[in-house]
Length: 186
Image (cartoon, rainbow, N blue to C red; front, side):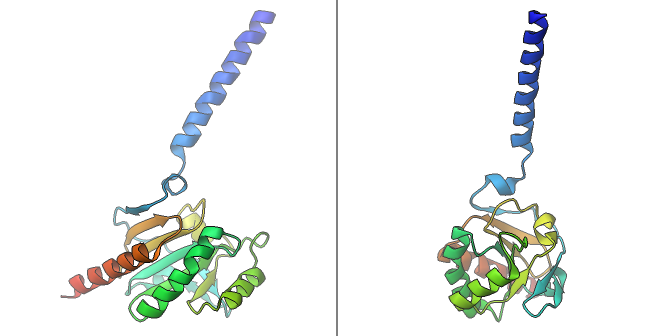
């Protein structure tokens, strides 16, 4: 009886160890990487979010111009650090690039009210959208924030950035998107 108990314990430990290895190896890259990576130029996955006036908008409504999609929340310290940079870049490039600043609105930790308060307090003018259903974060398997996607004017994902973006990285990414569009137009 004692031998059976030991065998079952060893088997259980083995199964747990294997499950742990599989779990960590199958996690989406979004959770592991903390840098900008070039994507495989796949078409952007469409999603629907709601703007501050309660109007639905889809990602595909913005295609035709380069699009910056940023996932954030007011409680996220990394998001807070990059908001001033996004605001600066929006003011500089907002005529050439669409900004979709998507608040991860779970209704618990982040609500529309808390996000609006944050936006007003910070004096942010870029377009803010609320992902109340989680459709946008599921479309890109977002497991942590901040995350920023760079989508070219044709609707292909150019790069992902995992973690807080600094001014130089964001500006270089935006200028890259603009140059891709200009190259295709010439």
